[in-house]
Length: 398
Ligand SMILES: [Fe+2]
Ligand SMILES: [Fe+2]
Image 1 (cartoon, rainbow, N blue to C red):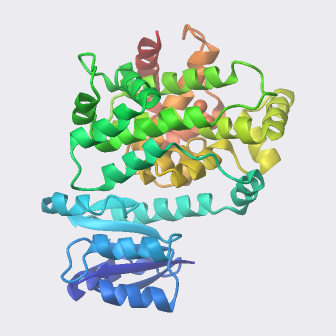
Image 2 (cartoon, protein in one colour; image 1 turned 90 degrees about the vertical axis):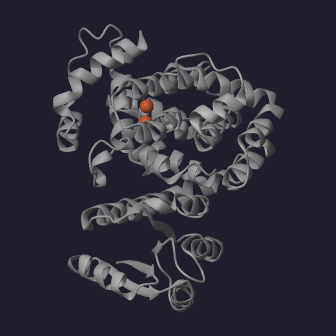
Image 3 (cartoon, helix red, strand yellow; image 1 turned 180 degrees about the vertical axis):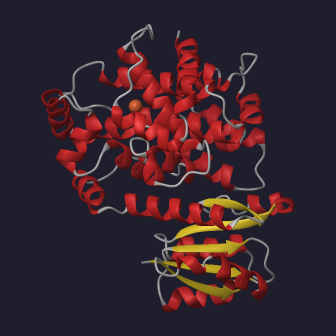
């Protein structure tokens, strides 16, 4: 049973949440704390899987509370509730909260966000992943420029110029980031040649995530035993999938997450190719023998797949929670609830289309969807629009 702590400075609001969540009492153990101090005392007494806190509270506010929780109980998931008028305040919570929800939110919105967060927590703490990643020893580490960039982006006082300067100092990183910014998936009308313009067009967070994408492909170098060209093929596939995510209609906020997540969705495969080449090769031959997809072969042989492994790694590297979630579930999107066309659905659809176009480049015969995918698209409510998405994908990739 998941243990969830709700924190607010108003007892009336906590009473409202208590009523809202009454139906969940058999699957969630829900506790309440009146204010930040009380919340920290509750965490000292017993551990929680998730803390849901109001942002604006007298004394210790939500960002400060979640900062303490992050430092003392890193495994606890952190969700912040904030009002629309508090965006400046909420920016302080960006580095400490996994997810944000705007107040007032409906019971179903709150419930599905909690479900999504709990399920990601389960996926990332699965013993199979711990065991696999544990055998590798030290994980590849990212450059010091990326570390400085992360720090600057999470500081509410840093300016666009400061962020751009950090990237500019790293020549390889700045070339790669500019290349990504100018790729078709962002649909910018003009070619952007400076990093400060990139940061002001796409925002600090997106630019940081693009830097992470370039870093990930730089540090994960396939082992010598892996056939030449595997890494290039993976990069091409990542770009094609991102281009498709850029072409499918969706809300801009969702697209921002989806483009970054598509660029990185199969990074777990690259990790296997670099850190566990033996397993990588067995997966490929198993998939060929059985005529199944590589992720299915991974699940059979390793008990998990590149989706969860990649999500785990990217979570450690500081990719935002929504993108990590989209990556973790990109082969099983129906295992979490969705309220519409969110970034997880977007990544799943773009990946499916990219694979289809790869198999049938002209798109003429690629009209067969596998039964399991058809059922999945149906459940997600996107089957009626799939033909339209395929047309857009074809245009984007040709
Ligand atoms: Fe995948
Ligand atoms: Fe893929």
